[in-house]
Image 1 (cartoon, rainbow, N blue to C red):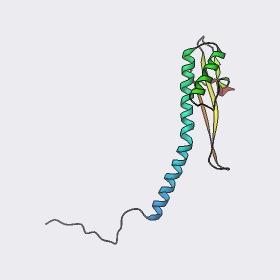
Image 2 (image 1 turned 180 degrees about the horizontal axis):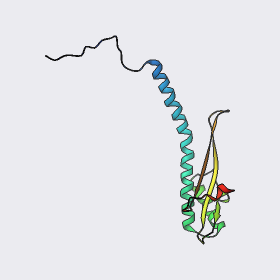
Image 3 (image 1 turned 60 degrees about the vertical axis):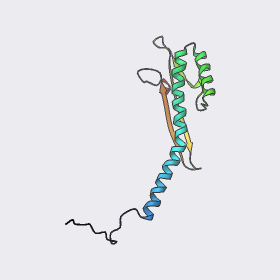
Image 4 (image 1 turned 120 degrees about the vertical axis):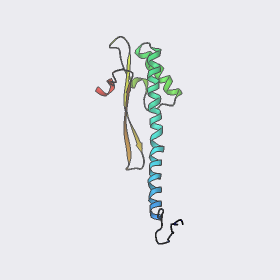
Length: 131
């Protein structure tokens, strides 16, 4: 004969209303932060792609800055302009670096500051951070 487990109403399982509310608050706050931060990160990724394209096109420093400005206008990049790029030609081949801060406001008194930087230099040294 099989033994059946008896369900008792004494021991309830599941989440309480308080636990549910607290869980939803945590998920909501994480969603708000993600909604605010993701556009900034996407812009940063676009800037990194832009400096790679500008380096491939080549040209003088002024031509590369103008090319980046065109790229920024097309891709809705507002945090950085061509004049903000650090372009060096140490080994004959140009290397492009950038560094900037993005402040993301949540309320009047609360904000997040994110430091972004990038380079086309294979060594990974960002020339803009040395300044």
